[in-house]
Image (cartoon, rainbow, N blue to C red; front, side):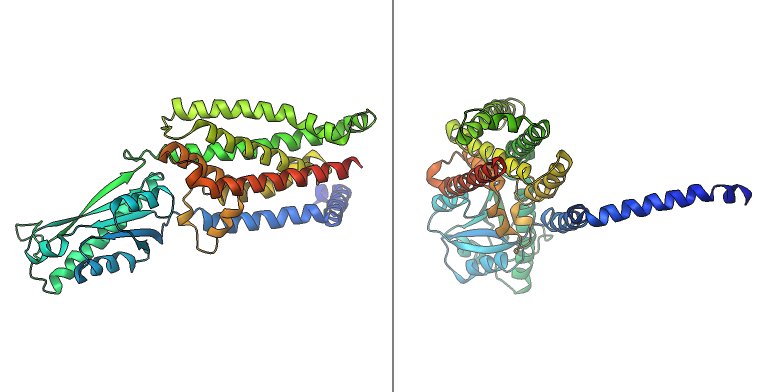
Length: 388
């Protein structure tokens, strides 16, 4: 008790210091908002965006049988939460083209003799095409389809279908519908291809924004911007001179990353390399511009890091680079269209794994080009405003 009484002045002094720190934080509204808003927003987004459940996969149908039995099979597949009808196609080639263009996630081909074989008690096979660019989603979709097919065969037996038999009766294939899966663009189901191509886009934009914002803030704290203003160089010349070295270094990093994708991860390269590099250049310019905007909105390096912490994680989780967009809730999926990382990941996967080019990926290229022009214009405007 005596020792506590002796330390009372120290406790009072500590209490005064803590109260002083609380008052200082309370006056800094940006710090209070940064402590509360970003974690809550990121918790909400990560909880929804990083879900492993895949639902509402777009299913295309080629129905050569065109009988009530084949329509029942299509209904059994699309009435589940796993698949939704993406449209009917005349041939398997058209179905494969739609999958390569990203319009469908899977497709089923019902043969002409489907109903006849079932009525005669013979096994029949339907082909199930899966977009295996994301091996994880393709595997889950195959599991969904096989589960639906088992229930469908059981329903045929319960409904007294003439050719349907119990699979345990010694003739397991007789009168049964069998599923033959075909994994397009990634027959070996190598899951690292999806992850590595997604991280490629993340690195280009996030690395560019972090490096450019750090360089800009450091130069402003060192006071060299004021020295540049005293030189005869114009504002445009200063901006171009600042961007050029970072841009060239990041382009070199991009070329090394492409080599790593090819040599280390074995990602196939079916499309055009210049097309992928063009998308990468747009990504780098977007990242540098984003970092410049963050730097002009921040007063110090710590504030720039907090702002980047607020911007970068949502961009990563809402890009579809690390997880399938189909696993996100329906209300969250449209937000991925506002993310340049999503468009670049689509371009890389389409060009490398599918071998498609500008004719198929032009919406993503156009969106990435618009994002780049907007961010570059915004960064120039903010930088000029800061110089003035």
